[in-house]
Length: 175
Image (cartoon, rainbow, N blue to C red; front, side, top):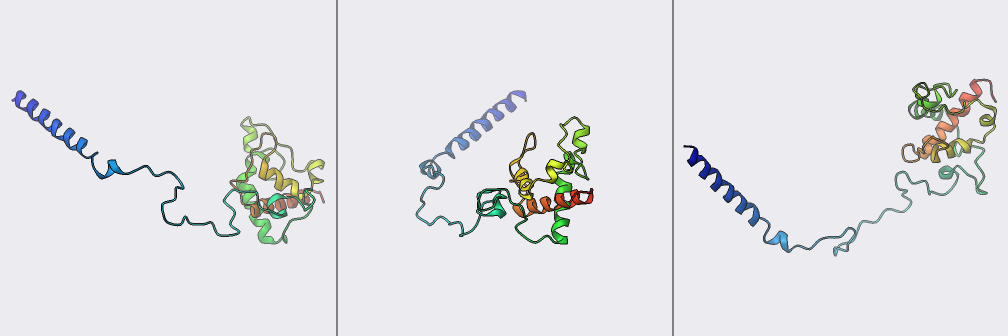
């Protein structure tokens, strides 16, 4: 009985191998390799005008760069500050900034208690005097050990966070 099982298994293995090897012949073998973006005889879809790829900060103007037409850091937000803007800024600040900066911006977030370097307090005089474009620039490009958030936070939300930071500074006795 053991000998019969061995012959059956061997035969089944040979048949399976033959079927698998024969499947590689024919149409699939004769097809050429298609290279990415190769002209396939049909038009490639064009990106609509004015579309900026996600995470791209190469757009023009203060809204995308945080800088005015002279290249200086913006001193004003590129849109009106409303209650909704500040609420959105607080929401984004709570998500991305509080782990290091803390809820009040003092620089004593949870990450700091776990051994990460403490960021400066957003209430330091130097940062109170910084133009609002400075915050947009730091959020976009990172600074020191802080990595950039340009691929995680949209420009409008970066401006909202900058506005919220100003509100935090005012609430802690600054102007």
